[in-house]
Image (cartoon, rainbow over all chains, first blue to last red; front, top):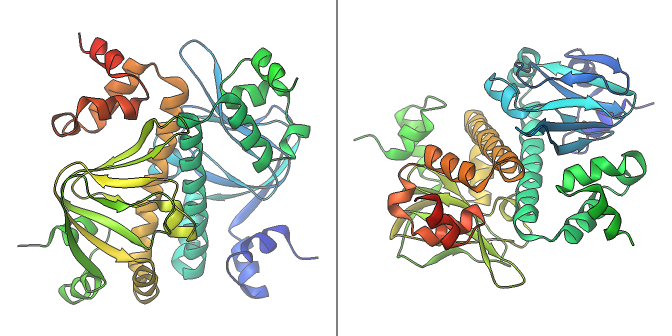
Length: 187
Length: 187
């Protein structure tokens, strides 16, 4: 059976069996239970994660103690505090598991080594970074422009499976509305 | 005198005279007057711009006809509709000049050629893309979390020169508030 990470990488670049074995040797597998953290606010993040199985959320807490969800992550997604990982500064966000999850991670050093040795993995991550940037840009357009109903419909269209897996209060937190407002949208 | 683009590139990678001449041969210089467009909503964007001199804004118009500013651009910044440029889809934003501006642009094809031939330019743009992604992530955190006053202070801290160059109504549009609200912040 083809490794899921290989399938994922081959959506963008082709790799031989030897190359994939070499790529995979830079990764480590971990399992986390529901509610466990992979990133905590304030730490310097040294790992980027790829989700084999499970569901996670990236979020921050404002001065009033309110949680704001920046991003959800599910199978085949990359997740980390990107600013902390790239700049080696303190993380502004936390990431924890909404379900029991199985992850692969690559450290900052290993990612650097791998891209130095395999130019096409640099191309792979450059492409992934572009996709991530575009999705953030669309989130900003949506935050500035859309009504709550439009934001909700966009989320539903982008991630139809999310709504079966994630509690309503988290959807509300992602959209920046109360649970009551969210309930009224569905009436 | 060192070319400003060379200075900019050498903040991240070193290039020889020959390499820089080769890089520059992939770019074209253009001049635009205040109020002229470089990107219009609905077109497929084939160029990425680097600002030699001037000031531009990237924005979109909502269904009610209200303009929302996504990003400002000044000297040494890259600007385009990134989603349209990368995916060759219709642009969701427009970009026009707030001042008379002098720009360099590189086409999609030339950028692809250049990165194929010079691995380190791929590294350069990968780094730039990471920086762009981080700045968008911080914009989302700010939109979700900060009060108008905090957003204003953050913008002032990030781009102190912007406030002398850009009309107050555009600052208000970037922050998503009315001009009256903005005036009250400065009292």
